[in-house]
Each structure stands twice: as structure tokens, then as C-alpha cells.
Image 1 (tube, rainbow, N blue to C red):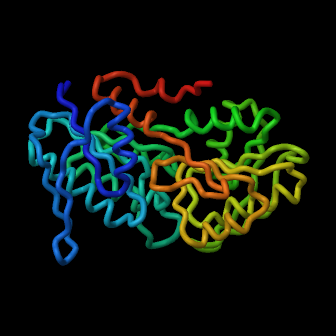
Image 2 (cartoon, rainbow, N blue to C red):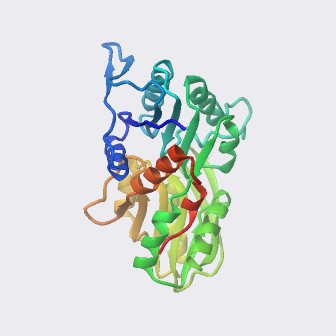
Image 3 (cartoon, rainbow, N blue to C red):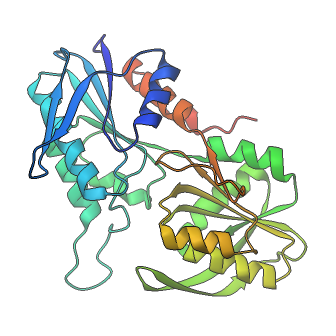
Length: 315
């Protein structure tokens, strides 16, 4: 195992990288990230990484193309600098929604990104709450898939009490919802959803008893908040006492912020700082810190120890 560990941050989320480095008790490595006048990315590591165990932290959130390209160039620079092992740490894996051919003549971009990371020089990848489990199979290198549940579930237990109902906002979220049910000893409900376009969804039927109970809508990501707000309205109409959202990645745009501010059916949206986001002054968005989770995963990978024990929920 390489003895020297080096942690580097891209420009997508330096605050998270700094928090991870502080958890590990080391300093972030120095790297020069600049742009040429025409916008090209330039990367130079300002210290020796020869035979080092290098971890590059970069969520490929908005702007996804810029952040992904920067990560690829950092990987290539580390490979050419003779690093012993290079691990790409993507708290959020961009392009994950394009993971299958559901229409004619469309790409599987999640697989393309996996190929690009490997070709650029990654020997290993760490990510959190992928949009679908099969993305792990897109990699021909070791891939550690973490979950935000060990961070979100204790918060839910402390603040929302018992007799909860976990709600899957569509059929693709049932497995995640069931995992929350097991952790919280809660009931399960499912809402049927049909996507009309990239920015519009239609939620219709509700399966499950939610009358007079606190409901938690779980999902891996939201960008427009359309699904979660529509689901909250259906749950309230069905008699739910309160409705919360628990989403691993919040890619909130201007429209999403407006929806959340105007929506009285949703009490609070609970998320993580895997991508840059702040608590809102009105308390509508609560951000939980996943730096210790990611930092512990990095430590265990470096030391050659098990990562699966991080999936356990601690009270």
C-alpha cells in the first residue's frame, strides 16, 4: 500500500474537500487550477506525488461539463506525475440519470463518463448515492458506492420521532425507500410518477396509508423540486399530518428554490453537502455534513480496510 496520502480538491466544492482534509487531520495538497484566455483548463500539482496515494475530490455538479473536464485533467496530471494510485472521489456523479437507452438513438452517458475517468487515470472511484445501482457495473476498476443514509437517518430519528411513513416518489425509488423503512422501522407508501419532460413530471396515484402520519419522501436527487412538491401535495390531500423530503443531492435551480419557498405542503427538505448548498434562512432546506463519511471512506481505502461497515446506521 502507498504510504503517503495526498488529498486534492477541484474547484467544484473546495469547502467539502477542506472539511474532509480536517477530518483526516491532514492538509489539502497544493494544486494550481487556472484557465487559459480561451477557457481551457490548466492543472499543475505544486508538490511531489510520485508513488503517493492520491485522492482527487470533485463532485461533477453544475456546471457539469466544466467540473468533469477539470477532474479528467487532474487525473491525467496525477498519472503522468507517477502517482502510485489515483482515486477519484465524486460525492455526486454527474450524468448518472443517463444510465440506459429508454428511447431510440440516445447515449448512455453514465457509461461514457465511467470510461473517461478510467482512461484519464483513475485506479479507483468513490461516489455516493448513485442514481441507479447498475452504474457500478459500468466501471472496470474498483468502485466504492456510499450511502447518505448513515447521516440522514440519525437526524430523522432525533427530530421526527416515530410512526413515520417513507414515501417513494416513483417506482425507481422504491429500493431506497425500503432501506429507509428498515432503518426507521417505518411504513412504506409509493406514488406513481410519469416524466413529461426534463423539467416537468406528473404524479398521480398513491399506494399506502398516510392519513394522520408524518411522511418522508426519499430520493437520490432533485433539481427542479417538481417531483417532491407534487408528491407532497398528493400526500397532504390524502391526509398526511406533515411531509418532509430527504434527498441525497439537491441540484436546486432558481425554479426549484421558488417552488420550495411557495410550497406549504412540504415542511422541510433534508439534504447533504455533497454538492455546494446552504441552509435556507426560513429553514426550508436543512443541509447535513457528509465530510466525516467521505473522509472515513478515504481513510479505509488508503489503509486497505473494509468500507462496507460504513453502511451501518449509528444512533
